[in-house]
Image (cartoon, rainbow, N blue to C red; front, side):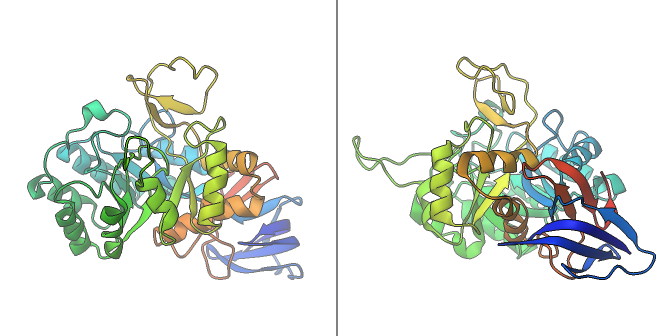
Length: 378
């Protein structure tokens, strides 16, 4: 048994100072301000720092340098050192059928390794997105019609690992794809992504499990009503529908999402429908004019933003800076909310019986220690 002492526990909506947390068999056994230490237990002194649930990154492609399917151990360990105890490697629309299947196979084998114990499934960013949006779109092999013979091998390979499938609801024939995913895995969730769909097209798929807005306000199109009038498109639909979680990429300069927009989304969506993601990507395109000094995002060779180089501790810190969110708030955005959105219900908060996936950090989200399934990592 282990005991974390002298901790300020971060709960969903409050703190427990001067607390002790007990861990047994990889799970949280008990916690509180007046908890007796069992005889002979291993003691971890938090030294007054915050102890919160490990981060859950549902959308990350890489460690910022190399994709998960190229070196899953290196990428997984990088995120773990920064407090991400659960993550979903994202596989992008630039892959063809065979490449998707091969990448799924690599990650399935990687999940058997102790070094990849924080990989909790997959996030399928494709195949059927809107070809007009997103980085590296000149490499998109999915610009044609939705064809079962092209997508079914991907579903068959990833069905039990893929917790989220990204789709553009405006693609003709997309419902056939959705139904075939659900036939293999009724619990699969869908995200509207790289899309210019109307509210009606998006809402029509909500009964089938569409409940996430992929990197909210990024690669989302516009549908003007009249030349001089703003229309209603993906961003407005995600904001309007209470059931849809809004993913946010929160970089230091507010490039993916303007800080004012971050504050607006907080006000609209509330504290339990925001998900912080890293969307870490591997791309070495040159920094375009006007972005000099930006060091936590990537660019492709067309000059488009291509994800980030961040981990969730950095995203949390940026969210606090841009919006005034508290430590408890950002733990909810980076742990509890994402775990609930993708069905990882045994983690994401400090509660008795849940996985002892924990981080110890200071008030600026600098990571001091990481605990994965009850074992001290850092």
